[in-house]
Image (cartoon, rainbow, N blue to C red; front, side, top):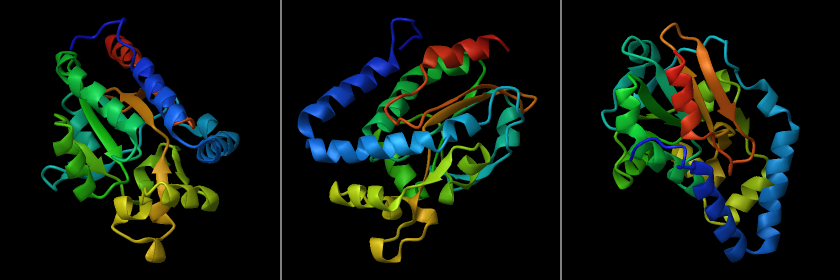
Length: 229
């Protein structure tokens, strides 16, 4: 797949939203809508690290090898695109991961590297990597600690935890291998879906994340940021 202004990731995500609204009960949709509005109202989007800020350094485990991956080592090779995603249970995240899978060769032709970070366990990240044939590293961020440094981490509130349980999405198990009875607060942490482009001086040159999990930056914006370096 080549980069084209005709390609719109958001169009693909909007189709998921349309299908969901047709299939899911209105009362359950209302819970999700309310949680999204409440998260937005916390002002979290205003706190996201912006272009011009220095990127936090990180060292996280790679799903494929189990070995630590250091952001400084990646930046020694080229500019870095860092994608934060919620988990393999989120169809919006999966669609975004697959879009970057198809764009990965073009990204490499731009001299950039791509990593995707989630609070999932390495085991869950490994499942994601294999199921969707992803060519780039998936890194585990327990408790969304690195996401916190980018100012995009939050804890799922109690009423929305019950919503996830009702639709059989076990966030604590996905994130920490825990069941509901022994879940820790850290196991209920998620990042906003977000993308950062970091140049080789460790400066963020592109930054976008949304409290509304149905919205993601267009890949064309990321390529434009890389072209500006």
